[in-house]
Image 1: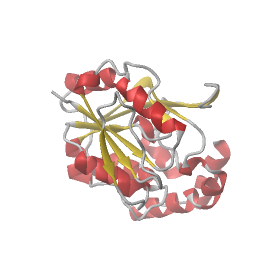
Image 2: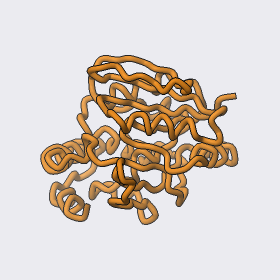
Image 3: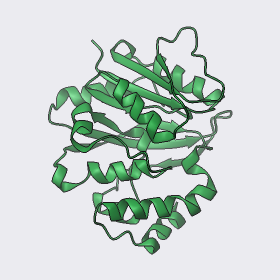
Image 4: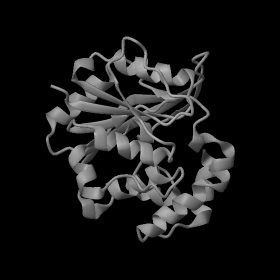
Length: 240
């Protein structure tokens, strides 16, 4: 029985896409995983011959349109993501995710820590831990690492899918919904390294961090009746 849907969205990701797929195929819990690849690349991707991932082709309508399509295509109780420029750090990540949700039927979502590494050399570039994260830090633009998020399907039924009007801030806006006290969701920080990212993603480009990210986070905060103070968001950028 499949318990965990993993969604991989890819858009011209090149070598990192293969690494993402291979990291899912290497999971000890692979028989319990439904892997859905949503591809909007200019040249359609080819799955490794040994992979049994399900390939869905879409037009390039943005990150969140692709992610929403993957969620709609998924069939499992728990949903996570390993995007085309990410990969799972070890073979037991999925097993630990499944065990966490099996152990607590009331648990709605979990998250952990992420590393940034050079794809070719494997050199560690930066570690990002969510150990000190508190929902109040959303006002400063801080969130857990989005690739470490695993969510029960019922949560999307409650709070909705990603807002496709955002270019790169839709994950931040989703965190605002997940941590909204009125939603009453139960969450847990795992303390585990749950994702590895390679540099070069759209949200990591310096021009986007400076010109797009603060404005989109401000818009998201104000959508949720929060202050959206630009100075706070710039302080977060300097910290990063």
